[in-house]
Image (cartoon, rainbow, N blue to C red; front, side, top):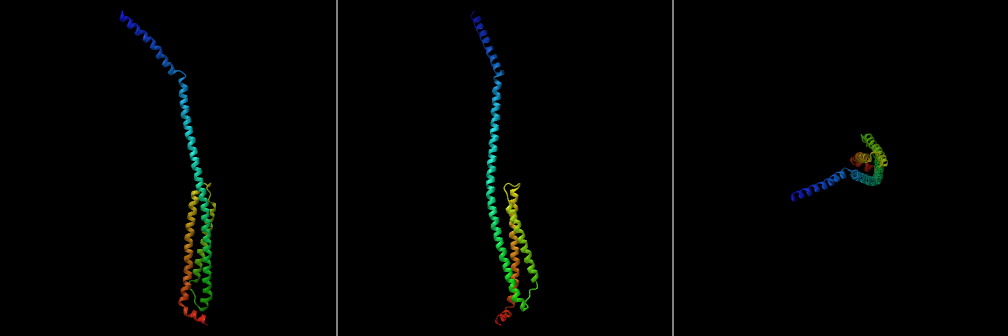
Length: 204
C-alpha cells in the first residue's frame, strides 16, 4: 500500500514538472526573446558607431594639430626665406662693389704702367657668370618660399624643394665669392710683383 502511494506521488510530481519544462521551452522560443537579441545587436552597433565617431574626431584633432604645426612652419619658412634672401642680396652687393673697386684700381693704376693680366677678360667673364647664377637661384628660392602653402597637395614636397633651393643658393654664393677672390688675388699679385714701378709713379 505504501509502495503504491509513493509511486502515485512520484507520478504526480512528474506530471507537475513537465508543464514547467514545456513553459520554459516556450519562453525561450517565444517572441519576447527576439527583442532582447535585437537590443543586444543594437547596443553593439551603437558601440561601433560611437567608436567610429571617436576615431573620426581623433583624426580631425590630429589633422588640426598638424595644420597648426604646418602653419607655424609656414611663418618660420617665410621669415627664413626673407632672412636668407636679404643676406644674399647684401652679400651680392658687397661682392659686386669689391669687384668694381679692384677693377678700377687695375684699370687706373696697373694698365697705365703696362701691367696687364693675360686672363683679365676670362676672370671677369667668370665673375659675371657666377653672379648671374646667384641672381637666378635667389629668385627661384624666393618664389618657392612664397608659394609654400599648408593647403597645397604636397606641402612637404614644397618644403623639401625650398631647402634644396637654399642649398643651391649657398653653393652658388661660394662659387661667386671664390671667383671674386681669384680676380682680387690676380690683381694683387700683379701689383706686388711690380711694386717698385708703382712706387716710382707715386713719387713722381
